[in-house]
Length: 286
Image (cartoon, rainbow, N blue to C red; front, side, top):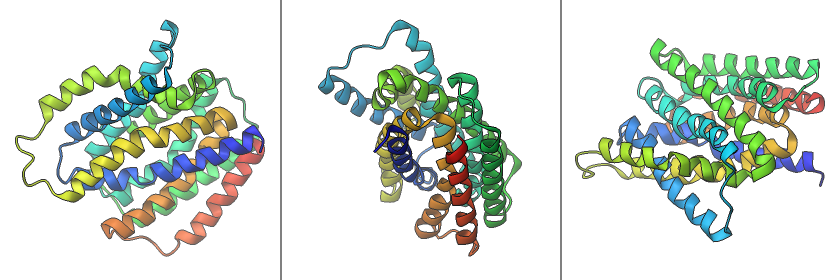
């Protein structure tokens, strides 16, 4: 298996894991505040990351990488989780998934700006068509939401795209799991303070679904998913592999329907097939 194909396979695993993030967040904010949820998931993931780094005896990152790791932390550890948690207090998980259709474009743009990638013009055509298909389908499926919720999701997409691109370029030198692990450790002191300050007055009465949601976003969304995702972006190319995120809304909508009983349009299969064609085209011209 060549590096590009391996990268796309690893990226697809990351997307499948990330697909559960918004439904799990939606469930978790039913028992925890967005601020506590964001900080607690980062603290839990950072502790696991520290164990992995120590067990593998990984060397400290170079001083010049600290600023770039801070960007990764801003996008993936703090920005996207907090902004989406705030948004999901106002909108449904199905509606929030509308905006995931814009994430591949954001990642590709930052991949060009930060990763010096130069996709062919046809790539942008397939990427734009795929994003438009996902956004249009999810908009019809998810209905309308408050403007504040929509603006929070747009901000989340921007910072997430930046964090993805920056993490992918670092992964080429440091390794995918090392990048997210160091980013988590870098944010740990601040996140620990925030978690203590925003913790519930009592944990009594918080239901099992909220705890399960917190566990999922802490272990899978915050750590394991990034391991596969950054590896995929580093091996297969940021702009190209990033298009796999076009599939995430359909995985996510399926989970939203199964777990949250939110309405999912029957046209999903048609739209999903169209997106697969766009992803294949983007891969061809990345």
